[in-house]
Amino acid sequence: MSKNRKGKVYLVGAGPGDPALITVRGKYLLERAEVVVYDYLASPKLLTHVSKDAELIYAGKKGGVKHTHTQEEINQMLVDAAESGKTVVRLKGGDPFIFGRGGEEVEVLFDAGVDFEVVPGVTSATAAATYAGIPITHRDYTASVAFMTGHEDPTKPDSNIDWAKLATGAGTLVVYMGIKNLPIIVDNLVSHGRDPKTPVAVVRWASTPKQRTVVGTLETIIDIVREAGVRPPALIIVGEVVTLRKKIDWFEKRPLFGKRIVVTRTREQASELMAGLEEAGGNCVEYSTIKIEPVDSYEVLDGELDRLEEYHWILFTSLNAVKYFFERLYAKGMDARNMKGPCLAVVGKATGDLLQEYGVRADLLPEVFTGEGLAESLLDQGVEGRNVLIPRAEKAREILPETLRGAGAQVTVAPVYRNVSPEGKREQLRAELESGKVDMVTFTSSSTVRNFLSMVDAENDSDLKRLMHNVTIAAIGPITAKTVTDNGLTVDILPDVYTIPEMVHAVMEYYSM
Ligand code: SAH
Image 1 (cartoon, rainbow, N blue to C red):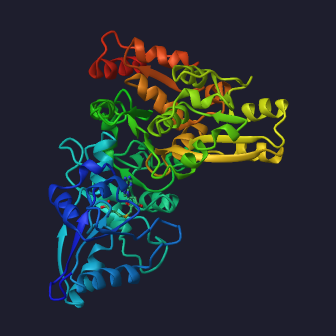
Image 2 (cartoon, rainbow, N blue to C red):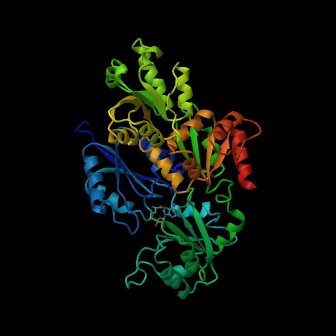
């Protein structure tokens, strides 16, 4: 970075939550930023616009929770980065100048002589109202709206809020950061003359798939919010316009609203399916293909292939282990005839079938098709002093080699392939299924089914059934459906015509039944 280059800080409004609600200008700046300092309320999906080389700094700020950085630290970070010549985007939830301390940050930049620009954003008040089906102004109801903070202690004597004027002064009131103080806010409004029958809406996580809206009146809203357990971030909208929600609520009424849908797709497939489901309100999470790759070095296996006849057992615990083992065997000019010494064991039937395609037969198939099952069957045979070779994935469970070693076997693990999947994705998928959050899984080809299953990595059939117990399964066509049923699961949705648009349509119909 040139020392003489002048840096600049762009305060950018991230919009209310839906990452599509950032401005074109905001996205442009994100793509060019060298440093991005972002908040709790800015959608993490916006970070996908940021260049790979940019530095990302999370500034935290979650109401009530310990702040990751103090405001002074954030200010200093912005100044330092700009002074080192960097282009900095300070990404702030909603609009930077509406209850976002944007003004304070810019003042600091001004005082430090740092160049800056501010890009407005869709503030959560208008987004929450719009996405809850409430026009914040309407000719028949109100001609004015006031935004206020509910965060300051309304009982303090030097309050900045003039309750007497505000309570009846504006037709619609929108309160930011007011959930904790809701009872005090309501009390202040009513005691200063606002009709207790005035309709109130509280909207949480507006414009996101997590959006939740509750409606009442000044009289009832405290109980309603308490009973519904509504927590921040939420906005309170007070005024007659709230009644229009009955007609205008459109966002939460979309057919797939609130449905968590796992989309497994292979690299080649466009995200047409996700786009279609999301248009209908679905909350999609994508798990793309795991890629299987050869390992960088076959040193271990190569050494063992030279002394194959010394082995008593070779254990194959997956299809890929068979495939990559034989590829290497062939590459060394060897073939099935070199396999006649050791006994062969496989983890399950499919692995045994594949082995046979390579010209050799399994000597042992466990009763239970898991690593544990295989270990148990081998222990029954007695493994003490036996040489056991396990060609397998680079990263795999250690239960099989450990159990065998514990029983006195000489075990050599030879990595022959590896799973390349985005960091942590497997664990994430597993955790989502465990927590029962997933409503549906979609399959658009047999390989997406197999991918999904290998990512879920269920212990056995009953573990898989348990994980998928309340999950609806949509398959694009009969072949894909057969792969699903072959794996012991049931298909709930199958379109008449096997295309993505028809599949989206079938999913929508399923949920409108
Ligand atoms: N600058 C932001 C507001 C920051 S103050 C803006 O223009 O929207 C933080 C408060 O904003 C939260 O306590 C909550 O009251 C409100 N808020 C922000 N995002 C929200 C969302 N998606 N849904 C509901 N309220 C939200």
